[in-house]
Image (tube, rainbow, N blue to C red; front, side, top):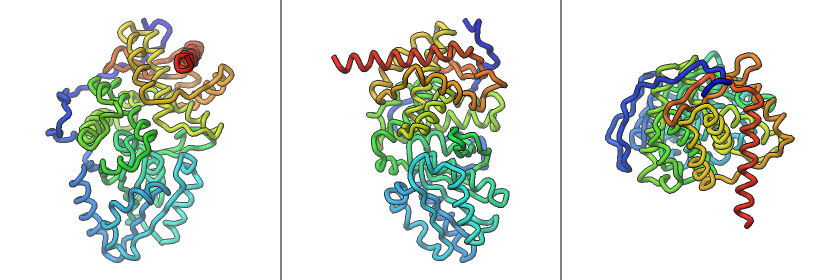
Length: 393
């Protein structure tokens, strides 16, 4: 079944399967890495109050990094926590959007830190989605060889993925995330009330990462990755299950030597689409790009495993219920292949993928021939054409 694929690793993730019900979860979140605390809701607010009270010494510089959206919509919800800091408090607000996840934004943050004469005792709070936590985490990781940082994710994607697991990154030269570091935040504070500030496309973008965990770790999440489940009653349990899955994986492989690679399911092609959209100055959110990448990864999985063959059909129904397909032409294939060459999982000139033997059983470091990768892109284009025909008849 895997005859023309170079297969190097099967994920063996030992985990206790929790019965998922749409009720307030009664289990404790697994966090095997004590260097980062992950707190929810009232516990998160209480911790934030206490942490800021401990910093209100009149000396320690405290910085808040936000984007224009999160500063306007999210900061007012927690502003009272910061009010006791007085002149210790410094605010850095960047333009919202992926374009700010750049070296120039890092330079701006570092300049603000230097202007405030911030030493290694400084603390940087990152209030935002994946762009803000990735960028802020990276800036903190290298300023004076590392200052304390705390993530307050405000998007579903940030809560289930980007703020969890100690990865930081910025975009560079039109490539997604080629520069970054592994750097643990002091804490990640999950407050689902922020989800009410999101437009629908941002919420749906996060669902792509939710369903990813269903395919690579806990298949029951596939049934929960739906927009009608993202309400105050149900969203917390979904986020907890995603974080629990990621924590198990990261705890087993903190520096992405083997098992952690499965978190990149859908990302090899997804990042290429995201970079292509940046070149075109199109708006394509990270989750939207990963959703396309998972289409192609599921198509490829079906070529190598009979047990995975039927997954794409059900996935297509899910995709159509949540996303508008991003159109590409056959002429774009060459550029997408070039962009895939920048993927961090590659070995030499060989493209490496995370594919599925079946839902919940991923394989990593799977080398796929270029022609077969192109076939997956053409399969996506054919499917988009079929969708267009159905909607126009």
